[in-house]
Image (cartoon, rainbow, N blue to C red; front, side, top):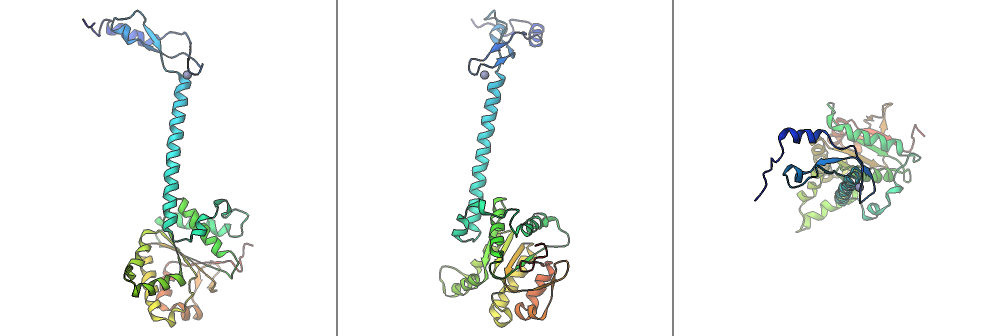
Length: 284
Ligand SMILES: [Zn+2]
């Protein structure tokens, strides 16, 4: 016959629970010396004379917790890596740039570092900005490091889990033109890529003179208007020099107006275009 569970009184059980033995015991697995004890349920049921049994080993428990944590961290890292790989693949960056080792990325010794930091902080705090977005205009002659700055900022943002889109103006408009005769891709499909990204990097901006190409002008305005309304951050990169005031804010000039046109210019101004001059950098 089964013995009753309450072979000892509740009082005695409570007493046992308060007065664990002082004795220490050695863990068979790790040789750690423990003083943890448990009330022996066999004793409680009346099937044993041994009141206490050895409890958990503190050291083994720590090891288990550590291993579980490591496993979890590893899983998070794998997921983050997968996420950034996916974001990178969707970023529009060229394969060769994606493959570049990340230790070649911008470091404090690099000339562009201060701008990298500035752009990153603007992008990260932009969501709560009541006065609107801040867009960037990076310009410099060839080999001033603007493409390098841009590519590496794209990668850093992606590693932070921020969806980014990189486009090259020249190739972008070629793609639009191609879509007119394509059966696989419609022009409207091309614009969809802007939706997913929070930050757009627009390389070779003003490669075209927009006031001389009406179809490009219309599309440029439409895109800039969409990016403004949807609160995206845009970083333009160009070798067309623009003027800025002492706060690095864009100054409207006749040349700029002639090149980009009135309505796109109004969008650039509305987004507080911040000019980064790599040719004549006041910090270096
Ligand atoms: Zn142990």
